[in-house]
Image 1 (spheres, rainbow, N blue to C red):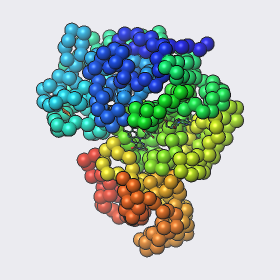
Image 2 (image 1 turned 90 degrees about the vertical axis):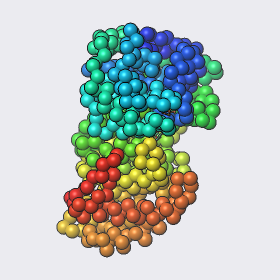
Image 3 (image 1 turned 120 degrees about the vertical axis):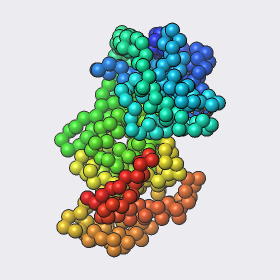
Image 4 (image 1 turned 90 degrees about the horizontal axis):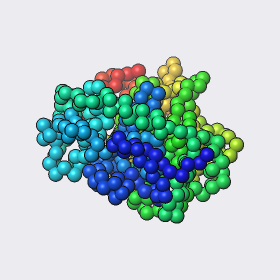
Length: 489
Ligand SMILES: Cc1cc2nc3c(=O)[nH]c(=O)nc-3n(C[C@H](O)[C@H](O)[C@H](O)COP(=O)(O)OP(=O)(O)OC[C@H]3O[C@@H](n4cnc5c(N)ncnc54)[C@H](O)[C@@H]3O)c2cc1C
Ligand code: FES
Ligand code: FES
């Protein structure tokens, strides 16, 4: 059975929408069709957070709430979910929610344009966490405020937990959960309007068939890249296939010695799986975009977009990950480093899609990864370097080193690896390996960094990886405002 309408819950009320252009963004629809103008458009590219709404997804233990950017979510992607906008946060009797009351009390708003977005990020935090996290900055990094200053807003994030819980909170949650259960179904969907179509297959087999039959279709996972093609480049995207309903695509599994990460696993989900296993990967994800983008964007999308500055590829290449692909009924797997074949080109045939990534667990604790960007938070890398170096008996026995931002693709530093393997793990060996960078890379200059800067930074990151492992008490990392001393291993 194929449905031709999408159904979701908006501020507690069921919505059924058909015959709409499938690349209409949630923000456009809220503001134009529903006249819910509390959510603002600041940038229309996922950077400022003024459009933040809270999306609820039915899980086994109830509804799971996340903040996302409405400006780069296409409306059909909301199928089966709940959406709360800033208009739906206060109680029915008009009483402010603690997150709103706290912003009032802490003077957390001046001009107010950004305020609805902050309210929604705080609301999602309040729904999901019973106490203020230590690192509130990371929750708010995807919300820009240019005039109030973050001090009062961060104070409000703590204050909201001291205020009385809202009345009817539990009932509201239960009610939403029941509503979402009543809407759940396993049918595929096709939305057509304004000369455009979006297919939303429900299974991997249906996806494989649909993409094989329509290899020119644009695949959409979290739309944190594709959304900008529409809002910033005005690309028409006549036929799209959304992966968000494919069962099992958003699962992680442990299989023997590898962690299998489904292509539809979001960065937020993946971070929760990897954080305890690989501390430096956790730090990378902490600095990957803002939370709204991490809640929507997927691991598969970050690999499949073929970006030379995507953050995950260097880390996963250094770890020896394999990418698994499917085209119709054919399946194959290849080393991730061989997937990137040229500028914007991957080893992917028409109609072929990424199913999952297998990440060996063995090297996770040895991974050292460094992201160098102009801003600490919510910025794309100028250079990202990942190192897995094994030392035994004082000698380097294994080295896998990969960089983003140094070539047209994410790339292994093979000459540097050769210059290290078999040699003593000493500063002299590191210094001796530095000239090999020129064999591996000829970086370009662009708005993010000059070629010279990139080369120097990449070399320095190898030195830093060495210092971090050999010098005790050396402060080599900053996480939020806290400087962490990483001791010798
Ligand atoms: C504000 C902002 C900040 C960002 N910061 C960062 C950052 O710090 N680091 C970083 O690396 N990236 C960053 N990004 C880029 C982006 O968020 C990531 O690349 C994200 O992982 C893309 O995933 P997605 O699911 O949103 O992909 P989509 O936008 O849905 O798709 C991206 C591409 O992959 C293709 N695709 C998606 N899934 C598959 C699949 N399973 N098989 C084949 N093709 C597929 C799509 O057709 C498209 O070409 C940022 C983006 C924004 C808007
Ligand atoms: S409008 Fe700026 S993130 Fe959506
Ligand atoms: S209150 Fe003005 S930008 Fe935040």
